[in-house]
Image (cartoon, rainbow, N blue to C red):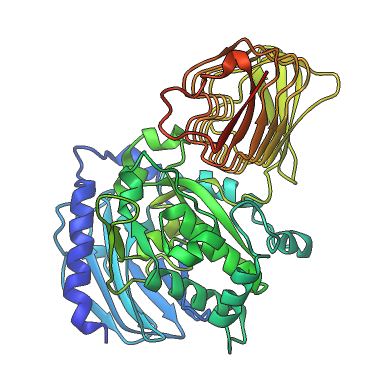
Length: 504
């Protein structure tokens, strides 16, 4: 079954690698390569029902240890996108000496092709090099250790897993329509492995990636699972929300994840990826038999919705892949930086958020702010759902960009000491449904709540003297009550609020 696709699969891998750039010694010196030596020697792939497909390195060899894979091919590809030596083939567990094929501290990648449970795979995000001692070792991405830390919130205790079965914003697992669809898709399934695969298969086969939405700024698109089950057209976050909602509806713990999608070339070599925490992508993870696996339906999907507008596009369909289903973290980290692994929980942490202000994040994803003056969260602090202010705090200003891209944030009650909300303070808080604005508030900055597309109601107190341009733009469901002095605040908006109530 796999043989007919080998040439095409390998060519796709090589072309993708070529687009990312050549991994040559002009750009990669020995010192930088040694810093990327991985501390693991085995990567554990699994089949859709949990079968073992381990790819490992040992001495000068690479090997496969499997109880389910067949039609195995291993291609070693160098920095010029040339295959080194003959294709290595096997029909089960095997080991191959490749030490003579590769040079010390040069990076190569492996195109690992196999069939498991009638599904063809091509994994080409496996990177290796040879050490000065002649051993083959894995090359890790620059963000692997960061991802390990961020995934520490993916707990497997009974309480945490139960929390990963509950509804949350856009994950409407308690909606009767979602429950009915999940039960339909998993009818006859006897394990969580079977349920998860049935749901993933449904999404990558029947949904379409919305290329219109990517460019369209005239409409704010909804990405809640209930709506998307009807339309079956979405982008990354919508696919993640729908997969997680359907899993939770039939008792399979799952979570939505946010972060950065990138090429393996970037995660190995681009120094900017190390500090970048501006999410541009979303996906999901699912817990099966006590282990969390990462899934990215967007990158396995080949269906497309294209055209000129929301209502006039057309869907085209093609066969999906399953190369990004149930990936181990070592491989997932080659193309994904995980900013928030689990939007239900938080990683306990604390730090400074202003000259006289501090923050703490608790396990239940609550951010507590203490101190006085201006509050501006450090870049990348975004793994929380609620914001509280300590009773003795006297915060007066929510600083510029303070909560930007806090995608999981659901509600905020600002204290009566706050006078100013600066530019972009809450921009793209896409799950923010409620915020209380205190009677002390005088100023709302430009684009302060832009793209907070879940906001449902905001009361702007009479104390507010200035509302800058686009403060509540792109909030299509918002009912906002304003004093008469701010009656024209929505002039020039791209997307108007649902209703503006002007108080006399």
